[in-house]
Image 1: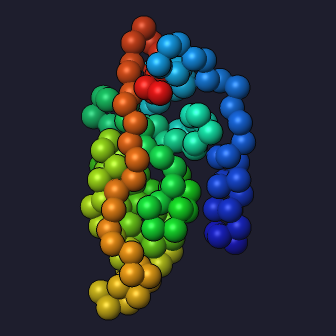
Image 2: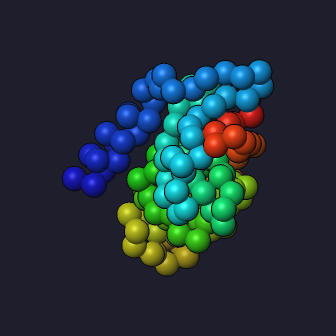
Length: 144
């Protein structure tokens, strides 16, 4: 059932959003009040599903796609500025996209190192795309 819900959320994230307003090279993605500390919010940005969250007072944005198997990360967890993939437990810094831990389990359950190397399918650890965020006049923008 969990995988079905993850699949539905993934599909939802690729539906177009009419909230983006182009302002030169900045695209408005919401109001400052929309982005709560430690909570994920998904927006459509130039055809990509993007997660925004406020961490230590700053709004950060990363692509909503795990670097390992492209699973939607918004179905995972966010804690202390780290987003965890719901499928294989890879961890990423929510502000920089840096990979902090690579394929350490399955569906939240930690596995032995030799097993995680198999699950990684030979892929080397890598980060995810992060975006430049500007917050001004109670609005949040992503730089295009």
